[in-house]
Image (cartoon, rainbow, N blue to C red; front, side, top):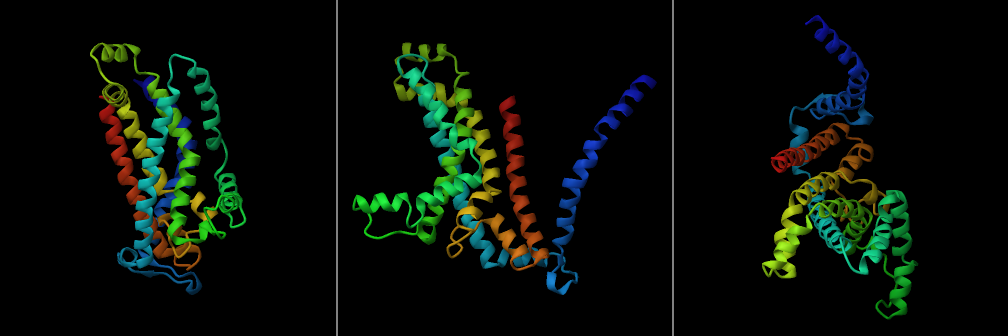
Length: 295
């Protein structure tokens, strides 16, 4: 018994540095934000006023916050939808197990992974050069007669969100593609052979064998992608900075502007807590979903 107790104590000592590190870098900052969300802290005044839940009420009735919430829903929905559908379509094509197309599929697999390897800053710079009014896209569109004048794609409220979503999908789909491809490799050939004997069509093989087998993986990736997309900041800030006319401002950028542009740290803390609550709901959904798929 003493020996077991000694082992437990030594185990605690081993993990103590990591616990202290997490406490200093994660739990204490979160606790500080929670406390700050109940106070009015306008930086120029250098004073604190306890407001209880008034910051949350202000955030939920603030037109800018509601616009950011709407933009976040649009951005998350289309980003996740195209991440999964594009990744699934390409992964199914790459999962060629026979024929001359196998070598071609292996080559494409290497090419498709490239966007995932570059940073968000490089991806943003790359697409800003393409979509610049004097960039490649406008030049070719005008040469082909599609456009008659230069377009500022990031400067048009009707197009900016679409381009941000396209860049996000282009940058991140290889990650989902490789994970779905890995899931496809676990589908036994015997299932396809049995389906062929039963006279199943190509679509029936895909739906009843391929799709249903890898569905747990797809659902898990979808929930994780929702969480990541809710928290996305880099590509939007680097390309449009939430503009034009707030057409691409999401909740993460709303929190940033409230804190560092308007200097309302108490209100920004409340907005951050609402954003974290939204992410936590999706995280709980992910944990429950993962637990069910493990049964």
